[in-house]
Image 1 (spheres, helix red, strand yellow):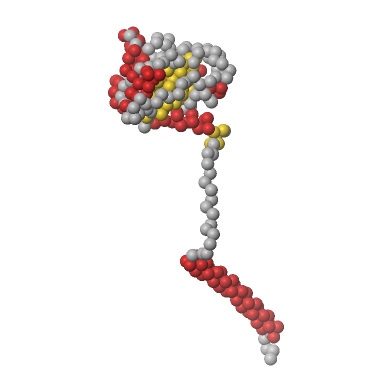
Image 2 (tube, one colour):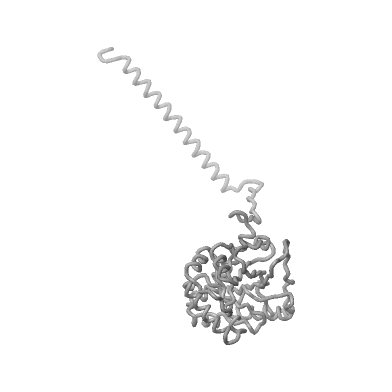
Length: 299
């Protein structure tokens, strides 16, 4: 199962463009996608989902993938601990952080409880990806997202920044914990899985780790976030419990009655043998006591 956890969406996206993008993603082999809404600060105290209903296919032969809801929060001030992230959990299926400064990146790697760190690799970041904070984030279960459509839309300077930043991220993480997404806004921004893996292999990401970035790693994010929303303190919600089958009412089958009679006879024999053994033991004790009372030499 292939995943694309970043399909760019905004309230101004036409429904026809969204339907075409979803259909193209399904045609390329992606089974699950996530519509990504970039938030702006400050967001309301009681946020609501801005996503429209998933459009219906225009024809019976047109297939659409499973659609999830995602929010990406730009992070610039590391002094804010969580930006009220728990209030977003009931609204969105996946949360992601996009750090804009070096301190914000350090904070996201070391302290924030978010599953994905998404970075605009076409920008001049002003800092380097160092192995220590990156590997600390990977060990905590945080994943780094590489969006290949950023390089397709950027100019020559942006593409150079993308190549340098992507290579530095792969080198700092040793290719671990990287999710490959598109951040596609139109169907033309999407690429097939084989093209994405070959593109990232040029910048140092192995083919096996590239395939994991489209399959197992995003799947783990989706599963973990689902458990986080449907469980409480490690206890998963119980949806339905199977009932114990009741014994049949009516005459017993001949085989069952014969088996029960054999078991009764066996138990009776065990009880009888136990009683006989006790009687024999009493007789032996009585005979020994009588012999001792007579003593040697007595007639």
